Length: 200
Image (cartoon, rainbow, N blue to C red; front, side, top):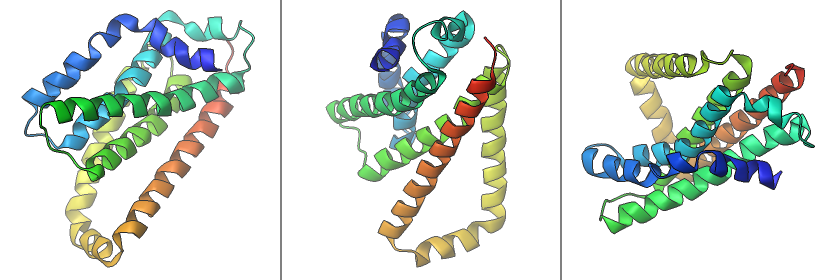
């Protein structure tokens, strides 16, 4: 399964040359953006590029001809996403430090949490939707989530602020982390069920 995780780097070695320049561009051009946005971009870059490549090359046909079970293929996707997200965020931390861009542990936590949530939403779609429609569906889905969250925040902002202020910071962080872990696990299970039933 380690080879499946390493494969994501090998198949997109040319795109990886753009990874650090893109982060540097966001650091300099997006100085008005919160630091967690940079961590989200960094963590999202490698796993989503790998999925996009597989969509174009129909790699799943090849993967299913290799001595790997479908359970291992899905596991490598989800474990690999966490691994590459961690490495990418580490690189972003180094670059931010080099150029004296301020950030906090909270920014790192928010960035990692948002990235894992986006993975949890996007990954099942890659197996559920037909190739060619996945990118469009994800963009539309993220826009809808953003719009709906803004509407919800507008109508319930006072209640949300009151609730959050009544909860201790450690309890809040632990609760959010637990929700994200459960969401990621449910996404993993859904992808597993969909992938087991697909014909390649």
